[in-house]
Amino acid sequence: EATIGLMKTSASLLRRGGMLYCYGPYKVNGTAVRSNLNFDESLRSRDASWGLKHLEDVVAEAERCGLKLIKTVDMPANNLSVLYRKQ
Image 1 (cartoon, helix red, strand yellow):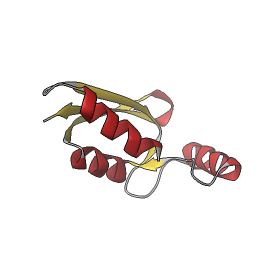
Image 2: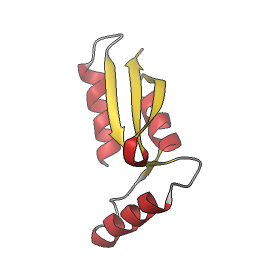
Image 3: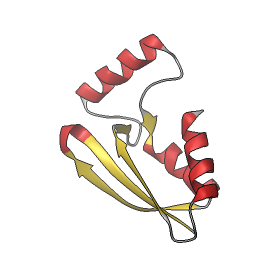
């Protein structure tokens, strides 16, 4: 899966203290605003492996790879900036 690859590759390339910045729509606590849920449905209709990721799952994968969540920031259009630091 792309998320697993992103986290594993980032963890292998970043130096200790290095930062990974991610941006986009996520499901948080299992839900999202209607427009993002519609986008999720559209993506999944094209490919079942696509769609919005649950932020909690992405953070857990990052932590398994040695990346610690530093901060999330609400952004325009119901997106999030998500910042991780390599431990």
